[in-house]
Amino acid sequence: MTKLKALNGFKDIVPGEVELWQHVENTARDIFARFSFSEIRMPILEKTELFARSIGEATDIVEKEMYTFVDKQITMRPEATASLLRAYIQHGLHVQKPVQRLFTIGPMFRHERPQKGRLRQFHQMDVEVLGASSPRVDAELMAMGALLLETLGIHVSLEMNSLGCPDCRPGFRKVLLDFIKERHGVLCDDCKRRSTTNPLRVLDCKNPVCREQVEEAPSIQDHLCDGCSEHFTAVQEGLNQLGVPYSLNKFMVRGLDYYSRTTFEFITTDLGAQAAVGAGGRYDGLVEQLGGSRNVPGIGFALGMERLILLLQQQEELSTPNVIDLFVVGLGEAASEFVFSLVHVLRKTGMQAAMDHEGRSLKSQMKQANKAGARFALIIGENELAEGMAVLRNMESQEQEEIGIGSNLEDISTLLVEKI
Ligand code: HAM
Image (cartoon, rainbow, N blue to C red; front, side, top):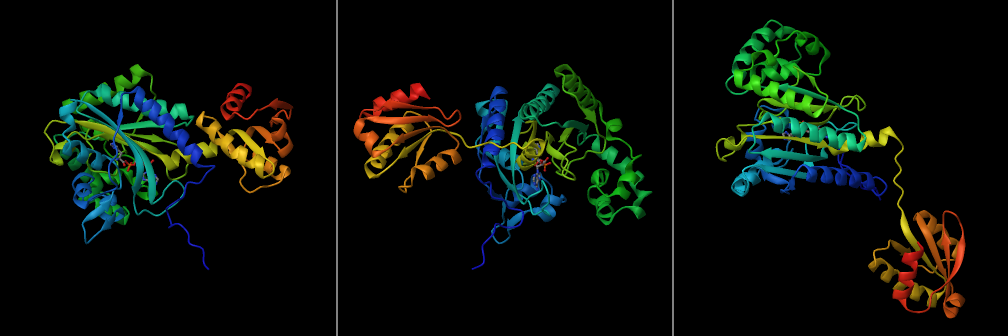
């Protein structure tokens, strides 16, 4: 029979690797809590329209990467921001608190060409602040991302840009279009198409010819209106004040249409083409665009978990051995039956305890104890049981001692908690 395999671009996370995922997630939860974020969980399926209206009809994601059930007009979320805002509006969360700080962790789906660090089902840790327009919040959010990555031991650089607002971006678009027109003939086919639909995207094309052509392109940072310019300066001051290093990148335009003003990316040089381990920005008009109240500004970012895990695995052979407290070896039927109850009592007290259920030999059970990474083994044979004795072995130092165990399981448990 042929073996069935997971789909291309879809991955299992197996024991041995899953511990690293838990570590990343727990670290994030801890840091998000320090910054007063609450968790929110949304469904994976949403109306297709939600993504078309937020991410934008002319984006790569909406045009060609979504997993859509065409007949039902529903789509598996390609990112979290749109769903989170939909939930925020639907539940009137602005009424509860004028400023909501929300995070969510979960799988997203994009039909991209799979490669290292790029999957079709991938996971994001996504944070959003709704109802705050202060540039301090932009700086605070980037500082939180930087702190999380630093805490995980991941080295990145923070790049930032401002995309202006509906008042100033059209002006820049015109200036940029004039610049692009002169070079139109040599641009890649994608950029030729983009120059009419979404000319800003020409700025971040990865094609080397296009890159060279836009090297001297005008910078949006020089075309911001007063409000956007002041905001952008204040964000930089905020980052300086918090001691978060960053650099400005006039080519960063992001692949989603909802951004205004601040955009940023956490970039690594260690993952080849998939340089962004996280990215985000401000989207001040989006809540209204999705049918929510006016004047609810927003900003957020998402970290790609697969990329974080790859970096951690690459940095050092992080073996996260599975460790348990105690392996209880029962030899013979009566001892095994006794051990069956004892292990359950030990687990109830909070100990990580394990046993064999197959009546294996002492040698084979000791091997199992080693494999399980047990710190201690308690060996109980038929004779020992009859005499109320057992052998406690420290698996690392290999020292052994005989202990009196009696027949009261709670007493044995108390004794073992003291000893190990
Ligand atoms: P994004 O840039 O599309 O932004 O994705 C954010 C991060 O998700 C990327 O930097 C990357 O680490 C990860 N990622 C994206 N696609 C893949 C993939 N196919 N495989 C593995 N990792 C991937 C957003 O999604 C926005 N919603 C971020 C945001 C939140 N903006 C404001 N709030």
